[in-house]
Image (cartoon, rainbow, N blue to C red; front, side, top):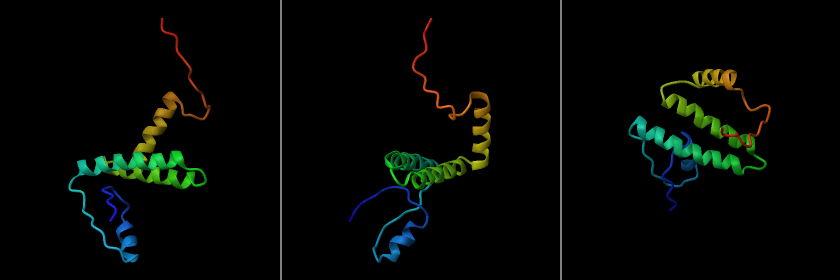
Length: 107
């Protein structure tokens, strides 16, 4: 029996159950543990995006789902995260101009 020990989407147990397989789950005990597991999951999802070829947008959607959950886990919302993103973009810019910094001379 494969052991996963990872955070999964809410409907995964239902999907597994429909296959007739048995499984074990638990509800994460506190917000700190939940945030820790979301952070671990973010690495997994980002790696899947980095390795994606034909399904990059689907993998990017998974990354975005984690960002939504992390915002809520921190007692906030995706709208607040978006407001912070916009403020930072106004002050520091975005990435639309594709600028690649090579070096900065120290004096």
